[in-house]
Length: 385
Ligand code: ADP
Ligand code: MG
Image (cartoon, rainbow, N blue to C red):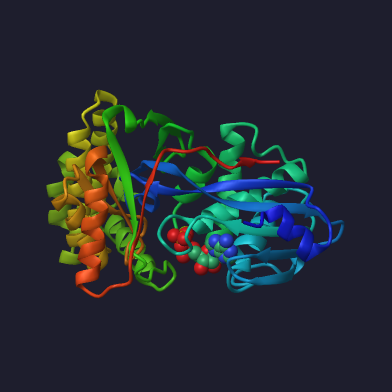
Protein backbone atom coordinates (compact mmCIF):
# COMPACT_ATOMS: atom_id res chain seq x y z
CA UNK A 1 0.00 0.00 0.00
CA UNK A 2 1.19 3.52 -0.79
CA UNK A 3 1.98 5.47 2.37
CA UNK A 4 0.78 8.98 3.11
CA UNK A 5 4.37 10.23 2.77
CA UNK A 6 4.76 8.65 -0.69
CA UNK A 7 1.45 10.07 -1.86
CA UNK A 8 2.47 13.46 -0.45
CA UNK A 9 5.61 13.40 -2.57
CA UNK A 10 3.57 12.54 -5.67
CA UNK A 11 0.91 15.18 -5.07
CA UNK A 12 3.00 18.08 -3.76
CA UNK A 13 6.41 17.31 -5.27
CA UNK A 14 8.45 17.14 -2.07
CA UNK A 15 8.73 14.96 1.01
CA UNK A 16 6.57 15.91 4.03
CA UNK A 17 8.29 17.38 7.09
CA UNK A 18 6.70 14.63 9.17
CA UNK A 19 3.84 12.18 9.55
CA UNK A 20 1.22 12.23 12.31
CA UNK A 21 -1.78 10.03 13.03
CA UNK A 22 -4.85 9.85 15.23
CA UNK A 23 -7.21 6.96 16.01
CA UNK A 24 -10.89 6.38 15.46
CA UNK A 25 -12.82 5.34 18.54
CA UNK A 26 -15.64 3.22 19.81
CA UNK A 27 -17.56 4.38 22.80
CA UNK A 28 -18.04 1.47 25.21
CA UNK A 29 -21.02 3.16 26.88
CA UNK A 30 -22.38 6.63 27.61
CA UNK A 31 -24.06 7.56 24.33
CA UNK A 32 -25.59 10.97 23.62
CA UNK A 33 -24.41 12.06 27.05
CA UNK A 34 -21.48 14.30 26.05
CA UNK A 35 -23.62 17.30 25.11
CA UNK A 36 -25.57 16.83 28.34
CA UNK A 37 -22.49 17.32 30.51
CA UNK A 38 -22.50 13.58 31.17
CA UNK A 39 -20.05 10.69 31.19
CA UNK A 40 -18.70 8.64 28.29
CA UNK A 41 -16.23 5.76 28.12
CA UNK A 42 -14.48 5.51 24.73
CA UNK A 43 -11.45 3.48 23.66
CA UNK A 44 -9.15 4.42 20.79
CA UNK A 45 -9.18 2.01 17.84
CA UNK A 46 -6.12 0.42 16.24
CA UNK A 47 -7.41 1.98 12.98
CA UNK A 48 -5.92 5.45 12.45
CA UNK A 49 -6.04 8.43 10.11
CA UNK A 50 -2.60 9.50 8.93
CA UNK A 51 -1.59 13.06 7.96
CA UNK A 52 1.71 13.70 6.18
CA UNK A 53 2.36 17.42 6.35
CA UNK A 54 4.70 20.34 5.66
CA UNK A 55 4.44 24.00 6.54
CA UNK A 56 4.09 26.80 4.03
CA UNK A 57 5.08 30.40 4.56
CA UNK A 58 1.81 31.77 3.20
CA UNK A 59 -1.81 31.28 4.35
CA UNK A 60 -2.74 28.63 1.83
CA UNK A 61 -3.89 25.17 2.93
CA UNK A 62 -3.49 22.50 0.29
CA UNK A 63 -4.89 19.15 1.36
CA UNK A 64 -5.15 15.86 -0.48
CA UNK A 65 -7.28 12.97 0.79
CA UNK A 66 -6.85 9.56 -0.76
CA UNK A 67 -10.35 8.59 0.41
CA UNK A 68 -11.92 11.69 -1.16
CA UNK A 69 -9.71 11.34 -4.27
CA UNK A 70 -9.15 15.07 -4.53
CA UNK A 71 -6.87 17.94 -3.57
CA UNK A 72 -8.39 21.10 -2.11
CA UNK A 73 -6.89 24.57 -1.84
CA UNK A 74 -8.22 26.82 0.89
CA UNK A 75 -7.13 30.34 1.81
CA UNK A 76 -7.08 30.32 5.62
CA UNK A 77 -8.45 33.86 5.63
CA UNK A 78 -11.68 32.61 4.02
CA UNK A 79 -12.43 29.90 6.61
CA UNK A 80 -15.50 30.38 8.80
CA UNK A 81 -18.99 29.02 9.48
CA UNK A 82 -19.92 26.75 6.57
CA UNK A 83 -16.78 27.60 4.58
CA UNK A 84 -15.26 25.58 3.06
CA UNK A 85 -18.07 23.09 2.49
CA UNK A 86 -17.49 19.34 2.47
CA UNK A 87 -14.61 17.39 3.93
CA UNK A 88 -12.17 20.32 3.69
CA UNK A 89 -14.02 21.88 6.64
CA UNK A 90 -12.61 19.25 9.01
CA UNK A 91 -9.05 20.17 8.01
CA UNK A 92 -9.26 23.92 7.43
CA UNK A 93 -11.50 24.23 10.50
CA UNK A 94 -8.74 22.98 12.80
CA UNK A 95 -6.24 25.57 11.55
CA UNK A 96 -8.92 28.26 11.82
CA UNK A 97 -9.82 27.21 15.40
CA UNK A 98 -6.16 27.22 16.45
CA UNK A 99 -5.84 30.76 15.11
CA UNK A 100 -9.02 31.76 16.94
CA UNK A 101 -7.38 30.40 20.09
CA UNK A 102 -4.46 32.78 19.52
CA UNK A 103 -1.91 30.43 17.99
CA UNK A 104 0.32 31.55 15.11
CA UNK A 105 -0.63 29.06 12.41
CA UNK A 106 0.24 29.45 8.73
CA UNK A 107 -0.61 27.43 5.65
CA UNK A 108 0.21 23.74 5.23
CA UNK A 109 0.44 21.03 2.61
CA UNK A 110 -1.30 17.93 3.99
CA UNK A 111 -1.90 14.42 2.64
CA UNK A 112 -4.44 12.24 4.41
CA UNK A 113 -4.90 8.48 4.36
CA UNK A 114 -7.26 6.63 6.68
CA UNK A 115 -7.95 3.14 7.97
CA UNK A 116 -10.98 4.45 9.88
CA UNK A 117 -14.09 3.82 7.78
CA UNK A 118 -15.79 7.12 6.92
CA UNK A 119 -19.24 7.79 8.32
CA UNK A 120 -19.38 4.45 10.16
CA UNK A 121 -19.86 5.94 13.63
CA UNK A 122 -16.20 5.21 14.41
CA UNK A 123 -15.24 8.87 14.35
CA UNK A 124 -13.27 9.31 11.18
CA UNK A 125 -14.08 13.02 11.43
CA UNK A 126 -12.31 13.49 14.77
CA UNK A 127 -9.44 11.23 13.67
CA UNK A 128 -8.96 13.55 10.68
CA UNK A 129 -9.16 16.71 12.80
CA UNK A 130 -6.81 15.38 15.46
CA UNK A 131 -4.21 14.04 12.99
CA UNK A 132 -4.13 17.48 11.34
CA UNK A 133 -4.15 19.21 14.74
CA UNK A 134 -1.23 17.08 15.91
CA UNK A 135 0.71 17.97 12.76
CA UNK A 136 -0.02 21.69 13.19
CA UNK A 137 0.98 21.54 16.85
CA UNK A 138 4.41 20.12 16.08
CA UNK A 139 5.08 22.01 12.85
CA UNK A 140 4.20 25.39 14.38
CA UNK A 141 5.68 24.58 17.79
CA UNK A 142 2.40 24.96 19.65
CA UNK A 143 3.22 22.32 22.28
CA UNK A 144 -0.31 20.92 22.26
CA UNK A 145 0.72 17.25 22.49
CA UNK A 146 2.94 17.59 25.54
CA UNK A 147 0.47 17.06 28.38
CA UNK A 148 -3.11 15.96 28.90
CA UNK A 149 -4.07 19.60 29.58
CA UNK A 150 -2.52 20.75 26.31
CA UNK A 151 -4.14 17.85 24.47
CA UNK A 152 -7.47 18.89 25.97
CA UNK A 153 -6.98 22.37 24.53
CA UNK A 154 -6.25 20.89 21.09
CA UNK A 155 -9.35 18.70 21.45
CA UNK A 156 -11.45 21.83 22.06
CA UNK A 157 -10.05 23.44 18.90
CA UNK A 158 -10.98 20.31 16.93
CA UNK A 159 -14.50 20.42 18.39
CA UNK A 160 -14.84 24.05 17.26
CA UNK A 161 -13.77 23.00 13.76
CA UNK A 162 -16.48 20.36 13.64
CA UNK A 163 -19.22 22.47 15.27
CA UNK A 164 -18.56 25.86 13.74
CA UNK A 165 -16.92 25.19 10.37
CA UNK A 166 -18.23 21.73 9.38
CA UNK A 167 -21.57 22.55 11.01
CA UNK A 168 -21.97 19.21 12.82
CA UNK A 169 -23.24 19.85 16.34
CA UNK A 170 -21.36 16.96 17.96
CA UNK A 171 -20.25 16.94 21.60
CA UNK A 172 -16.63 16.61 22.65
CA UNK A 173 -16.23 12.89 23.14
CA UNK A 174 -14.66 11.95 19.80
CA UNK A 175 -11.86 14.51 19.89
CA UNK A 176 -11.04 13.75 23.54
CA UNK A 177 -10.86 10.06 22.72
CA UNK A 178 -8.53 10.63 19.78
CA UNK A 179 -6.17 12.78 21.85
CA UNK A 180 -6.36 11.32 25.37
CA UNK A 181 -7.05 7.56 25.18
CA UNK A 182 -4.18 5.25 26.12
CA UNK A 183 -3.28 1.73 25.05
CA UNK A 184 -4.97 -0.85 27.28
CA UNK A 185 -7.37 1.65 28.85
CA UNK A 186 -10.78 3.14 28.34
CA UNK A 187 -11.13 6.88 28.92
CA UNK A 188 -13.71 7.91 31.48
CA UNK A 189 -14.65 11.34 30.26
CA UNK A 190 -16.60 13.79 32.39
CA UNK A 191 -18.07 16.17 29.85
CA UNK A 192 -19.22 18.64 32.54
CA UNK A 193 -15.77 19.64 33.73
CA UNK A 194 -13.61 18.03 31.04
CA UNK A 195 -11.80 15.82 33.54
CA UNK A 196 -10.67 12.36 32.50
CA UNK A 197 -9.61 9.12 34.16
CA UNK A 198 -7.97 6.04 32.65
CA UNK A 199 -9.87 2.81 33.33
CA UNK A 200 -8.01 -0.47 32.68
CA UNK A 201 -9.65 -2.30 29.78
CA UNK A 202 -7.99 -5.62 29.08
CA UNK A 203 -10.48 -8.04 27.60
CA UNK A 204 -7.87 -10.63 26.61
CA UNK A 205 -7.14 -11.25 30.29
CA UNK A 206 -10.82 -12.19 30.69
CA UNK A 207 -10.86 -14.36 27.54
CA UNK A 208 -13.10 -11.88 25.72
CA UNK A 209 -12.96 -9.81 22.55
CA UNK A 210 -14.78 -6.67 21.46
CA UNK A 211 -16.41 -7.31 18.10
CA UNK A 212 -17.24 -4.21 16.05
CA UNK A 213 -19.82 -4.39 13.26
CA UNK A 214 -19.89 -1.55 10.75
CA UNK A 215 -23.44 -2.00 9.49
CA UNK A 216 -22.71 0.17 6.42
CA UNK A 217 -26.17 1.63 6.94
CA UNK A 218 -26.04 5.28 5.96
CA UNK A 219 -25.24 7.57 8.83
CA UNK A 220 -25.02 11.29 8.86
CA UNK A 221 -24.78 13.49 11.90
CA UNK A 222 -25.73 16.66 10.10
CA UNK A 223 -29.13 15.56 8.80
CA UNK A 224 -31.06 17.17 11.63
CA UNK A 225 -31.85 14.18 13.86
CA UNK A 226 -28.80 14.67 16.02
CA UNK A 227 -29.59 18.34 16.49
CA UNK A 228 -33.21 17.52 17.27
CA UNK A 229 -32.02 15.25 20.14
CA UNK A 230 -29.76 18.00 21.42
CA UNK A 231 -32.58 20.50 21.33
CA UNK A 232 -34.93 18.13 23.16
CA UNK A 233 -32.35 17.73 25.93
CA UNK A 234 -31.92 21.49 26.20
CA UNK A 235 -35.69 21.95 26.33
CA UNK A 236 -36.01 19.31 29.07
CA UNK A 237 -33.21 20.90 31.08
CA UNK A 238 -34.91 24.27 30.77
CA UNK A 239 -38.27 22.91 31.93
CA UNK A 240 -36.51 21.34 34.91
CA UNK A 241 -34.60 24.54 35.68
CA UNK A 242 -31.17 22.89 35.46
CA UNK A 243 -28.14 23.82 33.39
CA UNK A 244 -27.96 20.35 31.83
CA UNK A 245 -29.54 16.91 32.29
CA UNK A 246 -26.38 15.88 34.16
CA UNK A 247 -27.86 17.75 37.13
CA UNK A 248 -30.74 15.26 37.37
CA UNK A 249 -29.71 12.59 39.89
CA UNK A 250 -30.87 9.03 39.21
CA UNK A 251 -32.90 8.98 42.44
CA UNK A 252 -34.59 12.21 41.40
CA UNK A 253 -35.47 10.90 37.93
CA UNK A 254 -39.11 9.96 38.58
CA UNK A 255 -39.86 13.33 40.13
CA UNK A 256 -38.14 15.08 37.22
CA UNK A 257 -40.08 13.06 34.63
CA UNK A 258 -43.36 13.97 36.30
CA UNK A 259 -42.58 17.65 35.75
CA UNK A 260 -41.83 17.42 32.02
CA UNK A 261 -44.39 18.61 29.48
CA UNK A 262 -44.30 15.79 26.91
CA UNK A 263 -43.73 12.09 26.53
CA UNK A 264 -40.91 12.82 24.07
CA UNK A 265 -39.00 14.93 26.60
CA UNK A 266 -39.61 12.28 29.30
CA UNK A 267 -38.12 9.51 27.18
CA UNK A 268 -35.11 11.58 26.08
CA UNK A 269 -34.43 12.57 29.69
CA UNK A 270 -34.82 9.01 30.98
CA UNK A 271 -32.22 7.82 28.48
CA UNK A 272 -29.67 10.48 29.39
CA UNK A 273 -30.01 10.07 33.16
CA UNK A 274 -29.99 6.25 33.15
CA UNK A 275 -27.16 6.15 30.60
CA UNK A 276 -24.92 8.31 32.78
CA UNK A 277 -25.65 5.94 35.68
CA UNK A 278 -24.77 2.97 33.45
CA UNK A 279 -21.37 4.51 32.69
CA UNK A 280 -20.63 4.67 36.42
CA UNK A 281 -21.78 1.06 36.84
CA UNK A 282 -19.66 -0.07 33.90
CA UNK A 283 -16.53 1.53 35.38
CA UNK A 284 -17.22 -0.19 38.71
CA UNK A 285 -17.82 -3.54 37.00
CA UNK A 286 -14.62 -3.20 34.94
CA UNK A 287 -12.61 -2.40 38.05
CA UNK A 288 -14.17 -5.41 39.81
CA UNK A 289 -13.52 -7.67 36.79
CA UNK A 290 -17.26 -8.39 36.45
CA UNK A 291 -17.52 -8.60 32.66
CA UNK A 292 -20.93 -10.32 32.78
CA UNK A 293 -22.27 -7.15 34.36
CA UNK A 294 -20.57 -5.03 31.68
CA UNK A 295 -22.40 -7.12 29.08
CA UNK A 296 -25.75 -6.58 30.81
CA UNK A 297 -25.10 -2.85 30.93
CA UNK A 298 -24.30 -2.80 27.18
CA UNK A 299 -27.63 -4.49 26.46
CA UNK A 300 -29.56 -2.12 28.73
CA UNK A 301 -27.87 0.84 27.01
CA UNK A 302 -28.94 -0.44 23.61
CA UNK A 303 -32.56 -0.84 24.71
CA UNK A 304 -32.56 2.71 26.07
CA UNK A 305 -31.08 4.15 22.86
CA UNK A 306 -33.54 2.16 20.75
CA UNK A 307 -36.74 2.75 22.73
CA UNK A 308 -36.29 5.99 24.68
CA UNK A 309 -33.80 7.95 22.59
CA UNK A 310 -34.90 6.50 19.23
CA UNK A 311 -31.51 6.71 17.51
CA UNK A 312 -31.11 3.03 16.54
CA UNK A 313 -32.19 1.47 13.25
CA UNK A 314 -33.08 -1.98 11.91
CA UNK A 315 -29.48 -2.82 10.97
CA UNK A 316 -28.09 -1.91 14.39
CA UNK A 317 -30.87 -3.82 16.18
CA UNK A 318 -30.24 -6.88 14.00
CA UNK A 319 -26.46 -6.80 14.62
CA UNK A 320 -27.03 -6.55 18.37
CA UNK A 321 -29.62 -9.34 18.46
CA UNK A 322 -27.54 -11.67 16.27
CA UNK A 323 -24.41 -11.23 18.40
CA UNK A 324 -26.37 -11.83 21.60
CA UNK A 325 -28.00 -14.90 20.10
CA UNK A 326 -24.52 -16.27 19.33
CA UNK A 327 -23.14 -15.96 22.85
CA UNK A 328 -22.23 -12.30 23.35
CA UNK A 329 -22.37 -11.16 26.99
CA UNK A 330 -23.97 -7.97 25.72
CA UNK A 331 -24.07 -5.71 22.68
CA UNK A 332 -25.10 -2.19 21.75
CA UNK A 333 -25.04 0.42 19.04
CA UNK A 334 -22.15 2.85 19.44
CA UNK A 335 -21.74 6.41 18.20
CA UNK A 336 -24.49 8.78 17.20
CA UNK A 337 -26.75 6.11 15.70
CA UNK A 338 -29.15 6.09 12.71
CA UNK A 339 -26.76 3.55 11.18
CA UNK A 340 -23.07 3.28 11.87
CA UNK A 341 -21.58 0.60 14.09
CA UNK A 342 -22.37 -1.74 16.97
CA UNK A 343 -20.11 -3.44 19.50
CA UNK A 344 -20.47 -6.82 21.20
CA UNK A 345 -18.63 -8.27 24.17
CA UNK A 346 -17.92 -11.83 23.12
CA UNK A 347 -16.04 -14.83 24.60
CA UNK A 348 -12.96 -15.40 22.41
CA UNK A 349 -14.21 -18.86 21.46
CA UNK A 350 -17.55 -17.49 20.21
CA UNK A 351 -16.19 -14.59 18.13
CA UNK A 352 -16.36 -16.48 14.83
CA UNK A 353 -19.91 -17.66 15.58
CA UNK A 354 -21.01 -14.16 16.52
CA UNK A 355 -19.58 -12.71 13.32
CA UNK A 356 -21.20 -15.46 11.25
CA UNK A 357 -24.54 -14.82 12.96
CA UNK A 358 -24.37 -11.11 12.19
CA UNK A 359 -23.46 -11.79 8.56
CA UNK A 360 -26.29 -14.34 8.24
CA UNK A 361 -28.82 -11.90 9.73
CA UNK A 362 -27.82 -9.25 7.18
CA UNK A 363 -27.75 -11.75 4.32
CA UNK A 364 -31.24 -13.02 5.17
CA UNK A 365 -32.62 -9.47 4.90
CA UNK A 366 -30.76 -8.67 1.68
CA UNK A 367 -28.76 -5.87 3.29
CA UNK A 368 -25.27 -4.73 2.25
CA UNK A 369 -22.64 -7.00 3.80
CA UNK A 370 -21.44 -5.57 7.13
CA UNK A 371 -17.75 -5.26 8.06
CA UNK A 372 -16.85 -7.11 11.26
CA UNK A 373 -13.56 -6.84 13.15
CA UNK A 374 -12.24 -7.12 16.69
CA UNK A 375 -10.45 -4.20 18.33
CA UNK A 376 -8.22 -3.55 21.32
CA UNK A 377 -7.82 -0.30 23.27
CA UNK A 378 -5.11 1.60 21.40
CA UNK A 379 -3.04 4.77 21.65
CA UNK A 380 -3.79 8.48 21.04
CA UNK A 381 -2.80 11.01 18.36
CA UNK A 382 0.98 11.16 17.97
CA UNK A 383 3.84 11.88 15.63
CA UNK A 384 4.78 8.74 13.67
CA UNK A 385 7.88 9.86 11.77
P1 ADP B 1 -17.72 9.48 11.50
O1 ADP B 1 -16.94 10.52 12.22
O2 ADP B 1 -18.47 8.59 12.40
O3 ADP B 1 -16.89 8.69 10.53
P2 ADP B 1 -18.96 11.83 10.41
O4 ADP B 1 -20.18 12.05 9.59
O5 ADP B 1 -18.83 12.56 11.69
O6 ADP B 1 -18.82 10.24 10.63
O7 ADP B 1 -17.67 12.19 9.57
C1 ADP B 1 -17.47 11.65 8.28
C2 ADP B 1 -16.99 12.78 7.36
O8 ADP B 1 -15.68 13.21 7.76
C3 ADP B 1 -16.83 12.35 5.93
O9 ADP B 1 -18.05 12.44 5.22
C4 ADP B 1 -15.81 13.35 5.41
O10 ADP B 1 -16.42 14.59 5.13
C5 ADP B 1 -14.91 13.55 6.62
N1 ADP B 1 -13.73 12.66 6.60
C6 ADP B 1 -13.36 11.78 7.55
N2 ADP B 1 -12.22 11.14 7.21
C7 ADP B 1 -11.85 11.63 6.01
C8 ADP B 1 -10.76 11.38 5.12
N3 ADP B 1 -9.82 10.47 5.39
N4 ADP B 1 -10.73 12.08 3.97
C9 ADP B 1 -11.67 13.00 3.65
N5 ADP B 1 -12.71 13.27 4.46
C10 ADP B 1 -12.82 12.61 5.61
MG1 MG C 1 -17.72 12.09 13.35
